[in-house]
Image 1: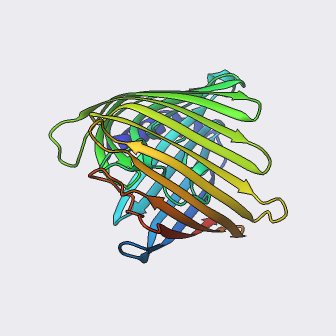
Image 2: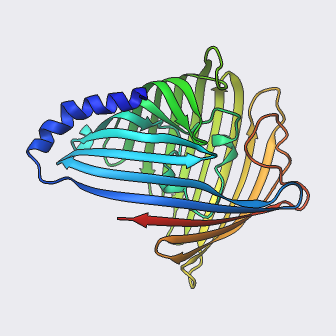
Image 3: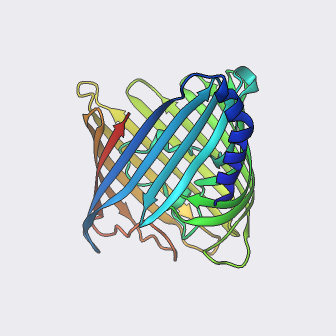
Length: 325
């Protein structure tokens, strides 16, 4: 059994069951997601596939005590992205969680970024062979702070799950601070520790990573961006992206989307550049359709997930269906 799952079960016994004994029947919200994608390429293979299926469950055991479960299936692999129990005290006392928690670095919550109209992950967060910035990690975390800013900290060690449902040994600590000012949210993050460079690697490679992010929101417009730099799995990386989402005022179901991004995974690697433009259409309450045109230069480095989209680029299509109960 995964170390994080063991920890979640232990904490559940210590905190959840006594509270549950004095509570009413637990209430839960559940969500099942399906992400169907197609690719039309001017250079390389085209095709369609069920890219991801995912299950998310949130159950209230007692006042202030909640269990969170988030599992995904990609590329023939299944992974646990989150399996934690949370205890909320409110105010600056915040929320503590234990089990498999999300590594708090940058704009990391898939509920904010998934099915947004930009189909793929940003290069700087995920376009590496077997490691990335997005992880479900076995450990403990705390979120709190006053109304003007929020602090997130986490300590973790064990076998984590990456965004491709790959697993890797991972350890360390991460902290994130975000401040609210007008229509903007400004954040900074730090992760120190180590991660396995590739499957069955004999050891781990150091991580000393920094990040800055911004989110700017108006009624019809959202702009998001991140800049990441430092050591990731032993490589001296730097990368950034800036994306935007504009909802058409007279056609609320339609949004225009775009992203400009760069990534240099290591000092000796060339820089990858990519431009994505597209549209998003909300077909029904639980159906979202997206079309992206994407152009890049390779990418030029050795190990990556993003297909080459040179020449006239390629066209991505996504049909995202959510079932909730």
